[in-house]
Image (cartoon, rainbow, N blue to C red; front, side, top):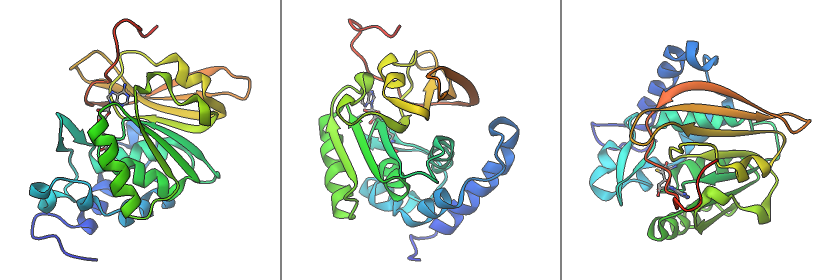
Length: 229
Ligand code: SAH
């Protein structure tokens, strides 16, 4: 692999994710993440997704600012959320809310058959779409919009991942999930820490929620006229 200076390199990032997975086992119930998840983490060039002045830190296991007040998530969290979706052994169709710089999108695209991703900030959506296309991810479709409503045209999904902190679960998302599908979402009060939740939709359509870990995400932006319920 290429070297990215003294500050960070992909091998160290993988080692840090492996170590953090062990440390958080009591929360997550998983001592390590699936092989496909970890090989996607090793393959996707994170330095391509961060701003020029952060390239040297690209492989540090921490979130980084990507402009517009938004962040690229911590690599361990990206790996955990992808693992929690449990799409490894499926020809999965996945919906992501909160494309940001497109890093998580690329990880999903390495594992899933198709990825649909929605970003509310138009400039970020366009930039991510251009970069993902340049890197050869042709199974990804990005659009600008409010992910609160999901993306009904491509539903149902095997997995839905939300990478911004919602105060409640947007109801449309559960409706767009396949039976036996999973929704991974941070839920909590604004500007406080949130609980990372996995909501599993049973074959009979009922949803079961499980709290995984306290996390800190940027807020989910949503028109207050259309309240979460
Ligand atoms: N997965 C991204 C994380 C980006 S931060 C990455 O690794 O880079 C969360 C993103 O969610 C931000 O870009 C923010 O603009 C976006 N977001 C917030 N509310 C949203 C909404 N209602 N619909 C779609 N995207 C939203």
